[in-house]
Image 1 (cartoon, rainbow, N blue to C red):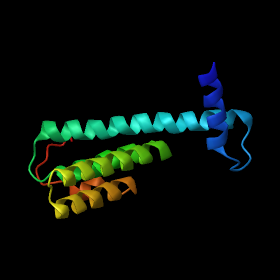
Image 2 (image 1 turned 90 degrees about the horizontal axis):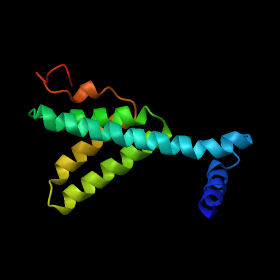
Image 3 (image 1 turned 90 degrees about the vertical axis):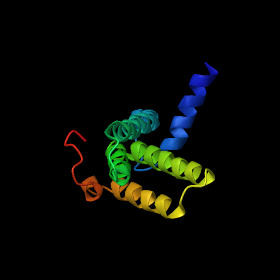
Image 4 (image 1 turned 120 degrees about the vertical axis):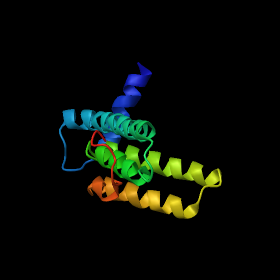
Length: 131
């Protein structure tokens, strides 16, 4: 019961007073964000799985852009999830001694996709059409 009350209070605080939403909007807005975030994380995982499956040379940036684009299309929660996942991935790569130039290029593709850019900008020649 305490958890339910905490969730309702958190929902009311998170929704704020933007446009003076009604009670139902105040309750459902945070849940919509969370739903979008979960779906966006699924989009990111799907793009990663496709990248591993394709195993195609020079396709990394394409899948970065595609995953971020698909996630961001879910809404603010999806865009948030894509940004958090992308930044975490690049941070871990740097901790493991990854190339800073490659990380910067990945982040460029991430931002391009999240911003609504066409991921085909990064599509390598010959990548099968299923991707």
